[in-house]
Image (cartoon, rainbow, N blue to C red; front, side, top):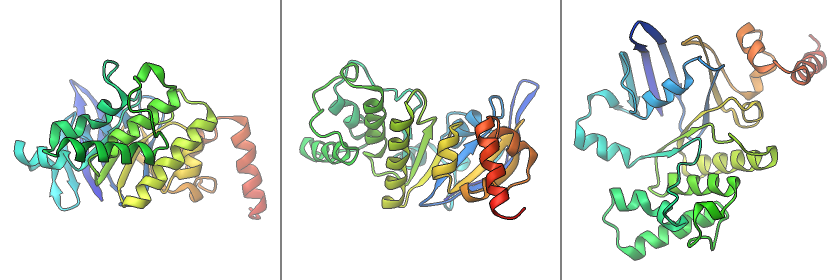
Amino acid sequence: MIRIESIRKSFDEVEVLKGVSASFEQGKTNLIIGKSGAGKTVMLKILVGLLRPTAGDIWYDQTNFGQLDKRQLRELRMDVGMLFQGSALFDSMTVEENVRFPLDMFTNKTAKEKLDRVNYCLERVNLEGVNRKYPSETSGGMQKRIGIARSIVLEPKYLFCDEPNSGLDPTTALLIDELIVDITRENNITTVINTHDMNSVMEIGDNIILLHLGELTWTGNKDEVLESDNQVLQDFIFASPFLQRLRRAALSSSGE
């Protein structure tokens, strides 16, 4: 589990996060949602240590993230996996080299141990036999799966995903969502996903926090979204006419 307490972040005179407290649960997909400018990207960067909060605390289980020294931070980062929005693969490296990169950086495993782990992770994301390909020789969906393989190669306890479905067609996006959910539950990972994809919200939102103008406005899960009377959530989720009709149908069937 990851817990944040009264997180604030300011840039010059502008306060982007305004005392946000929330919990991200182990073995579940935890979604951070909100409109552009809500503060969700800043929140994700703070959670992974790319930005320091102006105030507040971050707890990884019983460890206060802000009080770790360099050695302790390095140890904790071995427990963290990151799936970047654009996959962030190295163009000059093969798929195998990309996935192996964290093992080269953080472990003393033998070459065989590294290869075995790389192959396992590629098989887990249904990409057997692509070791020698380069990212440019793969599709967008394949690159996202390569990114997932790399993000789990160190067997992380915590997995962060920044807009995992960005740029993907709906069918591929659904496959990526299912893959993230399966990996999360199989390995009991604390997974945090920054997304604006409403399909993801409705399909895999085990635990959802909604940010609005830097404040925590709503928390719940995918089953509570359609029935919530939170106006900010309604304005965000039901922006399209289709989803507005879906909500009216859900409320009608429940007798409201």
